[in-house]
Image (cartoon, rainbow, N blue to C red; front, side, top):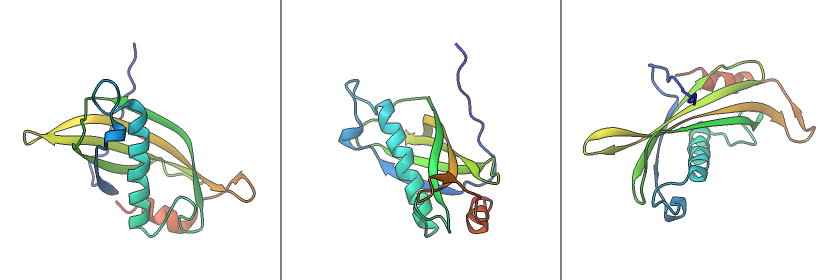
Length: 145
């Protein structure tokens, strides 16, 4: 079976979030569920946007909508673990961009990968229900790292 693989940039991330694993993130296997990872990257993305004075409905004149998502599961996380999520922007184009998420914990003093993820984000006008061009304000933030 071919596995999905992401390569993270070597330069500094656009943003780093720290999120604790909540009891609602735990599945019947006793670890973070696959569905919870999507929720966790959404929270990390919202924290990143907020740090720039944005939210998903206003990113400097644009709104955002997710076009696709890819998650590669690498390891387990458990209730109470502190996860670090490093976010990188790539493929910044006229109307869209990708966000890459490197999710890991620190166990016994060394990083332990939990998941690698990518979301394809598109600039969107919710009033007209159409894809729109990215503003210079958003482009500047995405290319600042």
